[in-house]
Length: 142
Image 1 (spheres, rainbow, N blue to C red):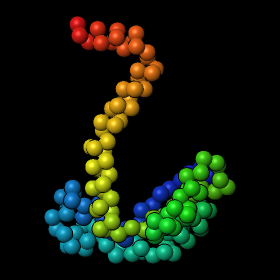
Image 2 (cartoon, rainbow, N blue to C red):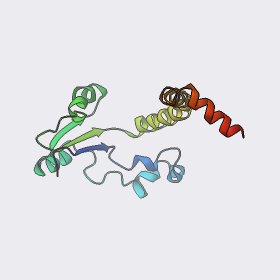
Image 3 (tube, rainbow, N blue to C red):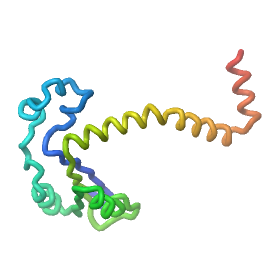
Image 4 (cartoon, one colour):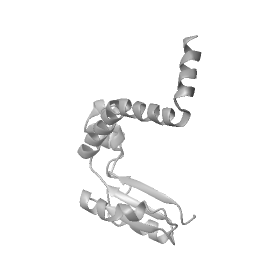
């Protein structure tokens, strides 16, 4: 792998996406863990499994279990410089926090659409200029 490769691995110890409110398996609640989400498999959030796997493959390994830990290492993960090795960043999460985060992200997306539209409109105006904008308006009126 190239040294510019970056992998973000969200380790929730199971398939939390199957427990989120917008997934069909969510109707099974706790039973989704055992029968659909593979809870407890693949290391059950082992702090060593992925670390050793990544390091054995020659990757630089970063991890975070808290917001503070995340803030300490995220700049290394996001560096624009080519590093000596590819980087794997493992972030440990839990079901409830992931559910909350999903709802927040989805609400930002819908609430923020007007902000995005305004920003795009302003960018187009600055790029094209008033004369071009007026010509576009005339074209669409006809």
